[in-house]
Image (cartoon, rainbow, N blue to C red; front, top):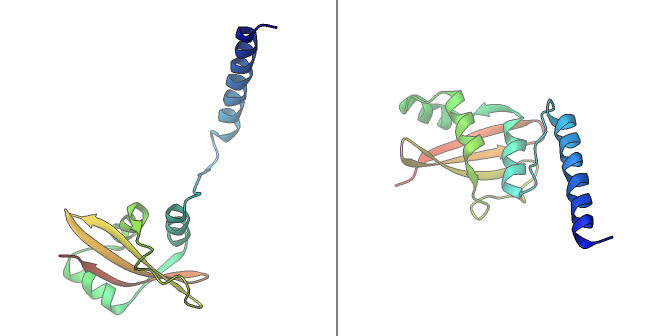
Length: 124
């Protein structure tokens, strides 16, 4: 069998496999969250959120609602150098994002069953 035939069989089987895979995964809510940032954000996003008094005051001052804060978490980047991942029982993560072209930082306590947004601040 010549090399070109082998490549043809390989590409044919590979394309059939992709079609079958797309068929099985088309209706499912699958995600590929393998990086540490994506796993942390997903873990925080799926939990029930509570807000500290300081966070609620900041939200009232800047006319933010819980939907905006959830979007900031989902689209944000975890700053692991400012996060404290060794604390028990809740790890504390610092999430950086932009809101109206201003840099904003969220401090989130990620507990077993709940995520507590403890602090929001606009960075200069």
